[in-house]
Image 1 (tube, rainbow, N blue to C red):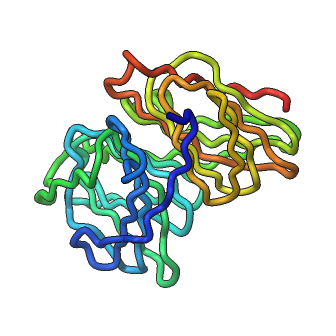
Image 2: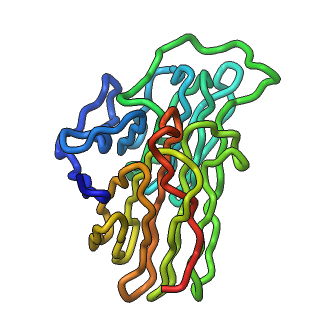
Length: 257
């Protein structure tokens, strides 16, 4: 089995019962099975919104690709938490919310990651109160990175929002520079290139990727990503639920290419 596996995106999208929303599964897929990692792309038209729901005991991580993503949340869903392109977001287990696109024009578009397969959406009533009035929805704003070196920028992580089983980071590669993994955290990993061209090597494999390409990294594989020419940017996804016995994909550290 190849250590690095290109993920073929499905052309099929479905609404899941919510008008104005389209969900495209990424992982798992027919070609690649995952143990717990679930990834999807979600697009919402202006005015589109989900039913009121929560995601049970699962972690939910989001990276906003386009537009504004709004979560109505907290007591009586009276609080609004907005994320915009480049922001990470995290929805805590059992946090009741309703996602929507508040814009008059333009879809929003996001990556959604959970520590389970499928939608894991549980419709519920609007809460009259929440513990301490908390929303359970967090925004980790986009951060800039230096242009002269490579940098891993923490997004969804225990230290930024209390996430337990999923993590998302932004990896910015300066021209002709790279970043490598070292043995560390267990889990399943996936990458998506946001911009630029990248060569990823690991486990004896080497793949050239460009913007929009997805990659699954087999658990236990240390890998290196290097920009091909100009600077590049990736989102790195990890799920650490119950795979420690067979997976130690590593912690990213910046290195010279």
